[in-house]
Structures are given as structure tokens and as C-alpha cells.
Length: 154
Image (cartoon, rainbow, N blue to C red):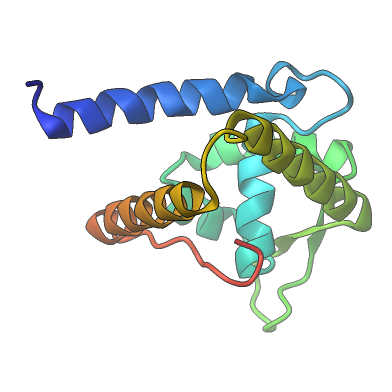
């Protein structure tokens, strides 16, 4: 039998690849958000407006990388820079109404794609898998000290 932890690593790698290819947004088709915009906007939606520094800490990405990504997102009209709602000096990125519409649409398409794949699973199997995957993610976040805010949208 293969090492169970190595099996989890392998299957998680494949899961990421399959989910990336599940819907057309992975290939930039159909006006959908690209993967980085989808991830960044999902974090902003969960946490509220964020500065480049906060995004850098949350994603462990270089500021220059985030500057390029957020500039492209702003040009696409899905985020905008706003003054810090708490009165701080740094400007923050907030999702625009168009960004909310596109993020909601993309997420709904992703869920629909997964529902097609999981059509032969029982509701209990889907719930158990979701619960275990959530536990894995929370443990990874705890280990890395970078928790993802979870709320009613998850």
C-alpha cells in the first residue's frame, strides 16, 4: 500500500488540476475571471477591502506580482482602489459591482460543474468529502498561520 500521506498529496495535486480545467474560465474563455483574479477577489469578498500588503501576507506573494495582478483587475473593472475604511493611510482594493456579478457567476458555474461530476455520489458522500476537505484546508492554514476567513459564503 502506498504511503497514505503521499496519496493525499498526489490526489490533491490532481484535484487542483481537474478543478482548474473543469470550467472554461481556466482558459480565459467566455469573459470569465482568470484564476488569480478569482482567488484574490474571493479573499477580498471574505475579508473585506484589502491593501497590497495585506494581500501579500495572505497569499505569501511578492508585492510586485500583486501590483501586476491588481492593476489588471482594476483595468477589467472588477476591483477598485478605495481609501481605507478604517482611516489608515494605505489604499485598499474593493470589489466593484461588476466584479461581484462576475465572481458570483463564476462561482455558480464552478459549483454547477462540480455537481455534474458528483452526480453519482450520495448527498452524504458529498457532505463528508466537503467536511474532510474543509478540515484539511483549515489544518493547512493553521500550520502556515494564514487562515482563510470563512463565513456564510462558503
